[in-house]
Image 1: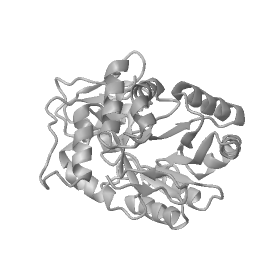
Image 2: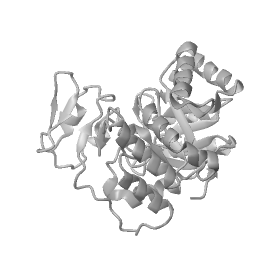
Image 3: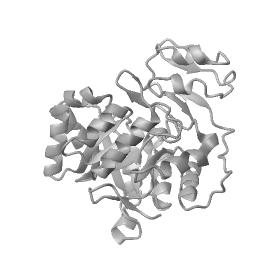
Image 4: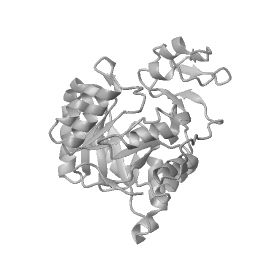
Length: 326
């Protein structure tokens, strides 16, 4: 696949990357061998860009794949992949620990990209100035190459576009605009598109998340990726990949090998709740058309897949994007 530079960072990435969260403990909970095999397959298939996070607890999958493929990297048979991670830390010390833990877990001197994870709105960015300072110090010391933020909020993305020292923006964007926030309310797709274009025009590298809305747009695979791949200012899209078939579909799309009417086989996929994101607000229960949602002893939502008709009505009302189709 033809690679693109992420803004002015000098980092080259494939137009699609693998989001490693999907194989992690809050979603598919893959074994080490299963998860590492998917990462390894993605690298061998030509994908060179991988997204993870301190919160995801998925470093071990990447580390195993990197170890398995080290002879191929050393010989030049395969290029070493670009790794992006992030942390929810707000203070200097917490961010420093997150960076050091990542470097240690992956046995890497330098992490290509490290971000403030889930900046919720523009004021939140200001409240995390200690972590932001740490990221820049780490960049000066060569521990990371590029720094920035990930966000689901259009106002935070717009603030990032004009923030000095911002190398990377990792925003939520999809062709229906599901999950985009702004301040305390719903943001629009157009507002996020504007923020992305503004960031890109200033040399900030942009790669997009949730373009398939946690797998909920699997039945509209071509439409969703056509939108994201053509979006002005976006250099790469990060897709959650839980199995080798997910990798193969993504690679085939970006090589132009999928027919326009292609739809992935979803007969074995189910709707479920990412417990790490669910806040127990009840919005999905109120919207559920088949009364498949209940609340467990832990206060978070559960889905009865015997009742679930996979209509998707619950997805756009979830404020934390905890409803996943895998």
